[in-house]
Amino acid sequence: MKKILLFMSVLAISCNSNDDSNDGVTNCTEEFVYGLNVNVKDAVTNAVLQEGVLVKAVDGTYSETLEIVESVPTFIGAGERAGNYVVTVSKEGYQTYTSPVVTVEANVCHVLTETLNVSLQPE
Image 1 (cartoon, rainbow, N blue to C red):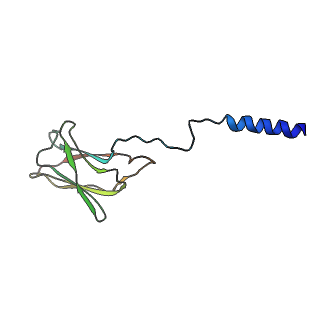
Image 2 (image 1 turned 60 degrees about the vertical axis):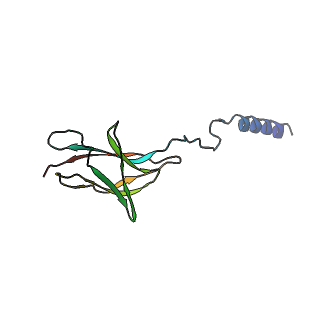
Image 3 (image 1 turned 90 degrees about the horizontal axis):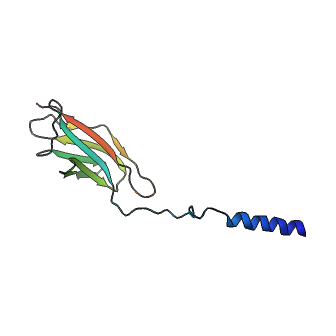
């Protein structure tokens, strides 16, 4: 009987000493994460290109024109959307760039941002 009580006491202590920080609940931030981040430059001068640049991401039947963030400068899109994207970058006076498939993955909380650096070739 004493052995059973000792075993029960040890079991109770070990059960109560679990790390409460990992209680099975995931705490995610409320930020909105973009899956794609595209930087565009002139291949010859290395100058950042923004004005007149069109960046489009396609995943199957889904299509999105990425938005410019002028202060960075970068184009962002695929907000909280995992997928396999082909990114097309075009600007008048430059050759259109088409990327290989860019895979945006997600964890429990958000997508994992993929950054694509594109150097457009002047025509």
